[in-house]
Image (cartoon, rainbow, N blue to C red; front, side):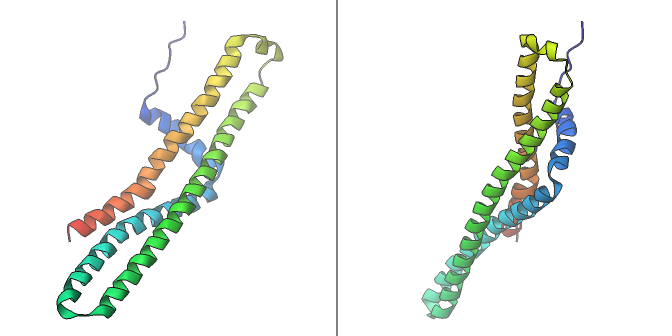
Length: 166
């Protein structure tokens, strides 16, 4: 009897990430750049909003309306940039997931094409192919989530941490 291989998170990532990269590296790099910029704009928006509140509070005493208008314009510009990058990032992530899943499934189908046609009469083989397809979806989702932790959330938390501790 064959010993069943146990998969842990790191082994799964070690096997999946090279395939994830191979599927469409240029699109992945562009997506990473957009995701980093998206995370940075959310972090910057916190400081810009705090600056707006500070400017409004100081203008109450000094009567400086021009400073408040510039702060409002800056908040508006950062908010528009943040929302535009949010939409672009979501669209690109959806496209990336479709491309990656297609690549993973193509690899499964290439291996299935080398199988003897008589073996397809066995329902266990068909179940294994279906399970492999579901595993491909899950592996792509895992890779995408791990990558987004470093591409979106890390820059965001660094910006927030920089703002809080300065």
